[in-house]
Image 1 (spheres, one colour):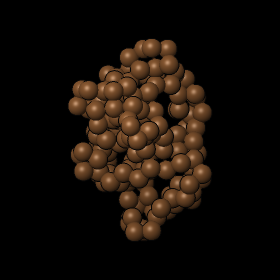
Image 2: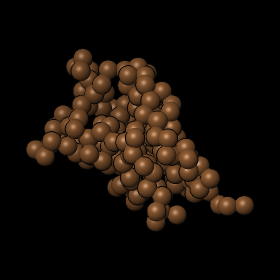
Image 3: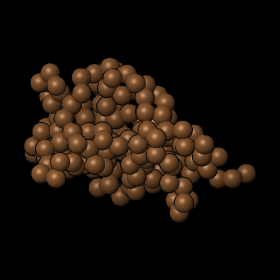
Image 4: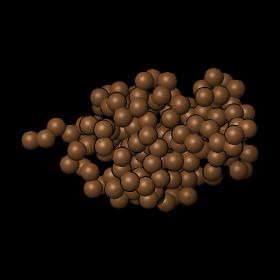
Length: 158
């Protein structure tokens, strides 16, 4: 029997309708590799207590690293501050990763939670890291960003 590696995965990439707009971002190539991985699905925004659907949020005052350091805030398009929910969700995602023996996280691109290069932030470069991705990296996890249609980067990961 082949040992499956536990991998933290943004739940929306697995076809779970947890995105802010109650849609998913199914990445079919992930499903095609379940013989090698044990998926550990998470949605940090739901874990933080936000509903689905929910208003989209942007990071104001920097990116996810700035939020973790108390300089940035997450504000919805309706003006609601949801920073605490994003932080709670990031901490819970890390806790799940630690409890599951995860070392690798495959996270949804462009997300203010999961993205490595999210446009939903205030950075001069026009993009920055999401809150959960920043916390995972700070705790030593290897994070790879995936888009809905991108290929699962299996080579060299296992």
